[in-house]
Image 1 (spheres, rainbow, N blue to C red):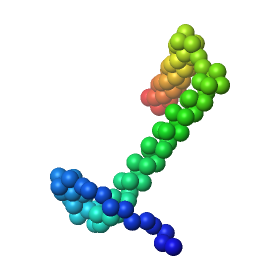
Image 2 (image 1 turned 90 degrees about the vertical axis):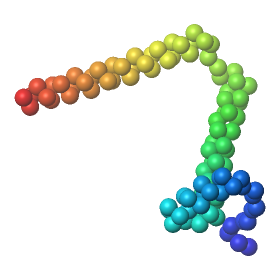
Image 3 (image 1 turned 135 degrees about the vertical axis):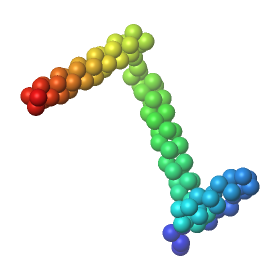
Length: 100
């Protein structure tokens, strides 16, 4: 049994021109580009589908936040990030002051 499968697809002429340009520029075949594009799309769509399923499972299990809880969580995350940036800025300024 072959490691790869063969599929057939109809491609608009405009898209085929783009594929040909890419193939020529990258020194790749149409088949290679198509396989990489399909793989990338399939992985991204599957990851998104899994992400949505996880959220649906959380909702079904009652793992949710109210709007107020979410706003408080987000405000806390923002405050932590701001404090971290400010600390980094202070350290950078101290280092520049020492170097001067």
